[in-house]
Length: 321
Image (tube, rainbow, N blue to C red):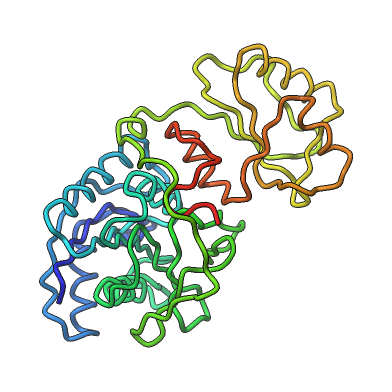
């Protein structure tokens, strides 16, 4: 077995049910390794660490920075690969942050999670972990990934971390923009040869930028959406997620006042989830209002890039095709 480091951070995969609630429990880490050993028959000689143990909905900028420092330390220590166990709620955000800190040219780092606690028969956590080990041992790729098996599917998807999309409401399935990096079938990694990505176009991010957590105001389009009268001090940028057709309100007094406020304060106002070629009249007004259309990428990736002080239009970590 290759030298694999496993970093436990909590989340459902690191929790047990106690009474009526699910809570982080250090014993869950040992349970995962015992379950893997029983299934695979492997010696399980992993390098283990647990820098924190939190439910992922409570993840902070400082927590993400701590995880990234821990990953970097394991890679600099000679690990052939790193597996990070993490809760599902903010899995995409931390994995994306790690992708921007490490770039595409590092030993494989694979984030794994579980949709239910490991003692629940519906849980995919063991499959996700085992597939991460398979991927690292088979030298499936370099950079940062997420291993995740959707319910009712046999294969475990290997996602490029900066391509994953937000979950749909009430749905624990995970998808990537423009397809997955590959799949694990019965322990064997199969690359998706239709997958394309650019080489890193900028230097990896500074962990200090992540720890500081630049303030980003992120909004979702909705009819009659309220925009604050004043943009709070210290906001680095505004991101508005467009409707599914790539459009957004450009005529109401509300949005036009808010856009003027951003322009007067010199705060960039980005539109995500839109793209070149949208023909609706509202989109033709984006430039007049000072809106900047972001690349056709995951809104999570664009949020993390702005938060970490990166240029959203330059590729890093596999986020832009």
